[in-house]
Amino acid sequence: MIFENINQYQKAKKILISEEGNTHLASKLLKNDPVFYNMSEGQILLGLNSLKEGLGDDIANFVGSAFGGDIAKIKTVLTQMKEQELKFNQEEFEIHKDFYKTLEDQDALEKDVNNPDYQALSKKLAHHRNSLNTRMRELNKMHEEIFDALELKIKDLTGDNKRKRKYFNAQRASDVLETRNDRYEKIKSIVAKSKVRSNELEKFFGVSVDSAKKEVEESKEKAEKISKDLNSTAPVSSDSGRGSEEVFTEEPEKTLQEEFENIKNSPGGYISKKKALVDLKDEIEKKFAEIKDDEKKTRISRIYTDSENLIQELEREYKKVK
Image 1: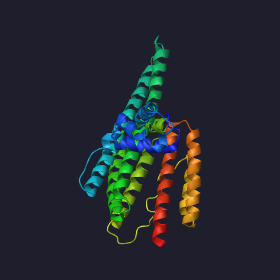
Image 2: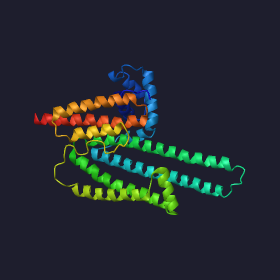
Image 3: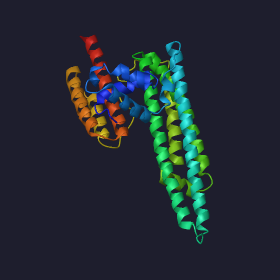
Image 4: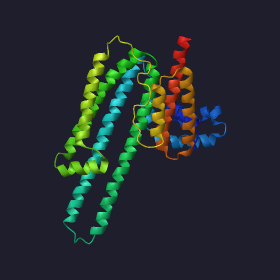
């Protein structure tokens, strides 16, 4: 990836999505932006092509449509989110089926050890199983990037409107319950034939029936709670929904996320929090320049965006008081 500066990466990603994946149009818009002063139009175009490949060609299809009023737009994005999750579930299901097919073929081959092609066939099956892991990683990456784009769209649509946000949260919670239940049923059907299948699936993909069932139960509780709160007149905290909901387990994003949460939840005022967030953004920029892995760049860029959004939110609250 050519974009080594996080500001370039963020700006390029935003413009690429808004221009529905049109890299040539996006490059013309970006070439006059001061953030890209050190890059030629050709370099920008090359970076956009690389970024588009990482985001996936289908992203623009999820965010490029023109809709009616805000509620209609929110409903459309909700539908896109639900459809994307169901699509993910089906593709994951196909990968799991393919995986078990290789295990069955391996079992059959083990009964024919005198086959002159035994070694070659066994190696071929092992290679195919490993390729399924790659397919699963690519599927997860695409799913994550599409949801990033859709969540940006929702942030734009809801803004600071608490009623819109509550409406979205209630509808989304209901959809999540449905899509997680769909995934649970698919996983359950895959491993139904034997306990060995369940163990193999968890060992190879880190997926289990129990964890999928737990996700369904948690989603059900959340959906019921949010549904009850939808028409509540109780004030919504200005921090509602602030920050990434993900829990990072790898470095440096784990530490950066912890720093962000500590700042957000600290008792400090506007001045001290803003200074801490600016320092955190500087730290993220340095890490971003050092990291070569595109997935890590994407994850820490979310923390950077959360920091920028929190600064803007603090400034709005500060101006109200002032």
